[in-house]
Length: 119
Image (cartoon, rainbow, N blue to C red; front, side, top):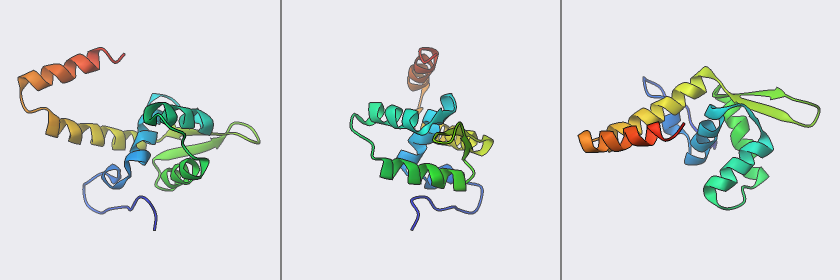
């Protein structure tokens, strides 16, 4: 059974992805990357080694779902980039999270401050 299952209806596929897969999408929202760069970003986030046997099957599944595009940089290196659907999935996850977190003006101000300090 795959780690992500497609769903029907108006909900985004992002709601059926694993946290690991969503983290890959968030990383790729910044810029296209090759596999080892994605691996390093994930290792920085998790604070532990990310196994190739976990990373690449998840990247392939995200490609199969149309959320990530895979292209060849050279004979040995693939580059991965977010598709428009992948970007929409990232935004859907953010919107859903914010709908649960922002419960008043104080929390909205805290989130605004985080956003302002993020770039």
